[in-house]
Length: 217
Image (cartoon, rainbow, N blue to C red; front, side, top):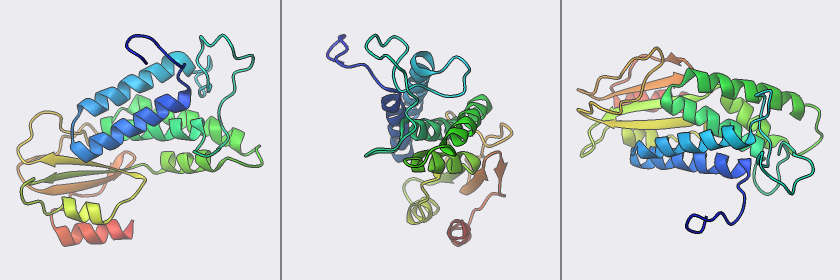
């Protein structure tokens, strides 16, 4: 954009990349406005790029006038395919928000993409990796003291590209992330909840125990 004027039409891969970037910024800062931005990008993706059957997305927008054939964008090039990035974006946003409808949407898109990838000879690693994420999305919710954290450094030492890390300071009342089942984590003491999809392990409060748990993953 230049002011209010659009210079180039956005591709579905652009919206997916911006969604993933916003979620990464949220993980780094804890600022929930980035989650709102990620939701906005996904909304634009749905509006301009979703197919009529709701099984996936086209690379170009529905109002493109110079595209004779709208392709899916399944093939990896210098970066992962648009479809792979979209599945990753949907899964990560669903993990952060606990939105079950969005999670179902991600599953549905991944299922159809996997079926198409099975018929292709090359360039499908992006879809395969994204589908693996959809099968086993990880979320780590950490309640910790910001001035003298005990659990956050453990998570930082044991990163996992499949995992969304959400850090909550002691005493936080608003913007607490939902655990599966709509449960809000208590914020009066340190704790860590590692969740796979809609299942969470019991809360961990000891740094050494969390280290062992994350290393096993």
